[in-house]
Amino acid sequence: MSKSVFIESHNLKNKATGLGTFNYELIKGFSQLEFSSLELILNAKNPNALKTEFGNKFTYNKYSDLSRLHLFRTRKKNDLWHSLNQNTKIEPYHVSNYLLTVHDVNFVEEISFDMNHKVNRLFKEKLEKSTAITYISEFAKKQTHEYFNVPNIPEYVIHNGNPITTILDTSGFASNVPIDKPFLYSIGDFLERKNFLSIVKMMVHISDFNLIISGNNNKEYGFEIVKFIQDNNLQNRVFLTGKVDDVAKQYYLSNCHAFLFPSIREGFGLPPIEAMRFGKPIFLSNKTSLPEIGGEHCFYWNNFDPENMKMILFEGLNYFYNHQLEMETFMKERANRFNWKTAASEYLNVYKKCLY
Image (cartoon, rainbow, N blue to C red; front, top):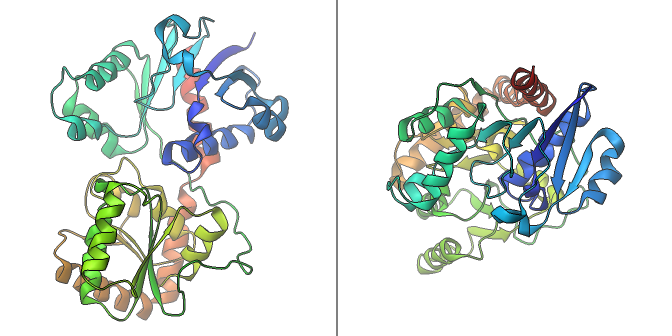
């Protein structure tokens, strides 16, 4: 008789976000595997769309906003509940086996270090009822142990896969920003921890390239960056595209001179491995999980002084393009190490260890 695994995947509705990407790509990885001894139940706002894509491979549960409330929690007692997000408010009414996936605990720093804060208390409750914990990076595991008392239960590190599994045709793409000059590229949500302002400040000292940044810049940090661009007359060298679809993203990744990702807090960091898929030079901050994900052939900023950042950038570009064939090969090989089918297989093994 098969065991039921309820996968709390409601973040599927926000595919443009990191969590949405994680949920969707993990499920797509599951769909490529055989798991006849398990019934995987997906929690989704639009289960019909998933059923159209994946058919009877999964069982589907329709997500309701009410399920955030204790009274309306899912009451069916599944054999295993998998929480795909450490901050989700969707919890089971009954707990049998509980698997928690931790992406990061950056919220500790963002809301304060008060362990009695509501968000911290909720996370501690998840830890206390967990049968096992998975982390998306060694850094996420280290960070969790640094701030919380983790119970003596099995723990596993399972790296994310690369979301770019298919190279799209971008020949018909029309950019909404100028691309007539070699450009540097970055992408992500406009949050302060993404540290985009540091690379914009660097552009004050660079005239050889333009800088293009994609992502939801219609928020406070985005407005701060726009003001800096205007105050420093960078309107003809720094461009914000807003959110982009997959075709646009792949166009910019495949045509940029280098990919920049100066984030100071990342549990994993998907955009750098997407850029690696195209064999690009990658420049990262040396903070949190990024050295673990980037590996030895990326280039790292250890501080964010604009002129120092420029020096690291130009030294790295010079080295990369003087060894271009070798470096492109290194980048693509590393990108291929991050595979969603492999990740999904590792999660299935964890399910079985929790259940049998």
